[in-house]
Amino acid sequence: QQQVKQSPQSLIVQKGGISIINCAYENTAFDYFPWYQQFPGKGPALLIAIRPDVSEKKEGRFTISFNKSAKQFSLHIMDSQPGDSATYFCAPGMDSNYQLIWGAGTKLIIKP
Amino acid sequence: DAGVTQSPTHLIKTRGQHVTLRCSPISGHKSVSWYQQVLGQGPQFIFQYYEKEERGRGNFPDRFSARQFPNYSSELNVNALLLGDSALYLCASSRISSGNTIYFGEGSWLTVV
Image (tube, rainbow over all chains, first blue to last red; front, side):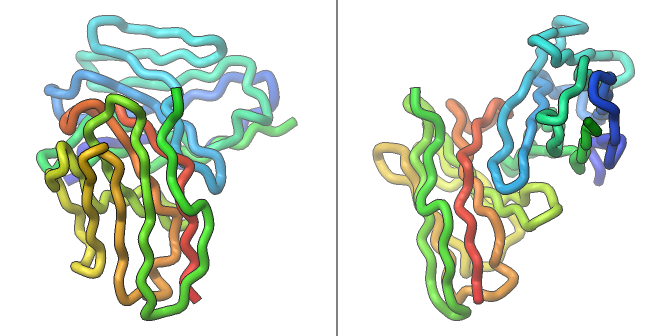
């Protein structure tokens, strides 16, 4: 049972470009939509998150867009920098076993 | 405020040995979860503890066990280590057990030889 679909699996963007990663979910009971950023060998870090009462949230170069009717949310990285090269995970909820429900991850590479 | 702290950061063990990994949650957080992350894959859920009780368990063998102490810190124990246990072990904390606002530590790298 795949509750979360994250795309693309990998993404290469030129420096200064816009990176867009998408996450589609099934459970309408989810009420908090975070993105995690993970660098190789490090733990995932909470990057930005949104509640369903707003459609967009911006923090610096990072923006979350949320579409409740489509059950999708996306991460936009503006003016992408080589330091943004990492793996990004969406994690929109927990299951009944208190397990975080993750997307499969997107490996982002920003070319200088 | 200090984040989630884990120790040790790196360790090497021999097959068949036992390992204990430790985690201190963010102050005020009562829930601790453990995840295993093999290189190139997403984190796999091992356990969640809340108020010193196990709330959730992932699909891991009984060689894996954990506990949470009165100060909410936690230990993950793995017995009879196998080569396949080599991974990054992540601890995460949250205020409550059911929220998905969780914060991860930097992890403990375990290599089994």
